Image 1 (cartoon, rainbow, N blue to C red):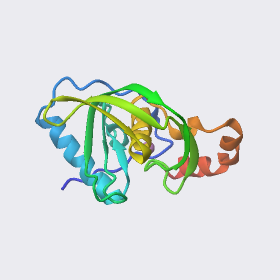
Image 2: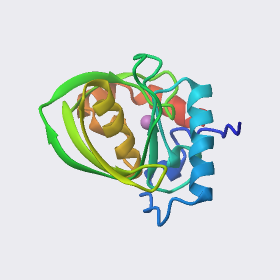
Image 3: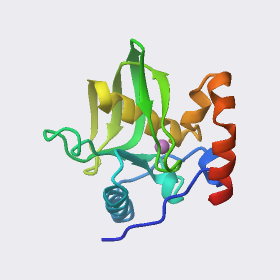
Image 4: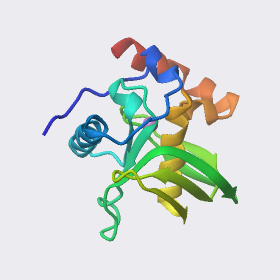
Length: 168
Ligand code: NI
C-alpha cells in the first residue's frame, strides 16, 4: 500500500498537459497501484496521475462503491473517439474537497485506451462511468471541472474557490 498525497486546486500542476506513456512497464504498474490505493483511501470514483503530481496520461475509475458489478478500470493513453447526447450531472473532484457542481457533458462515449497489460481496448459506455471518464480525461488536458461551469455558476462559487486555493 502506498497512498500518495492528492494535489489540490491552487497547485499549478493541475493546469499542465500530461504526456503519453511510452511503455506499460513496472514503473507504470507501480504508479497505477499507488493511484488505486490513493483513490480507495479518498473514497473517490476516479483519479488521474496528475492528481498525485505525475504528468502521465493515466487515469483510473472505480465505481464499485455505487455499483457492485463494477471494479477498478485503468486507462492509459486514452482517446475519446466518439461522444453522443448531453446530460447534466452533479460532479465532484478529489482536488476540490467538498465542492459539488452540476456540469453538462456528453451522455455516452466511445473510448480507446491501453490497459495494464499493455493491450489496447475500446469500449462504449454511458451513465456514471462515462461521466467519470470524461472528468478524468479533462485532467490529462490540464482542464478542471469548474471550467465547464457557466460564467454565472462560476461567479457564485468564486469565494469558495479562493478558500480552497488558499488551503492547498
Ligand atoms: Ni477531478
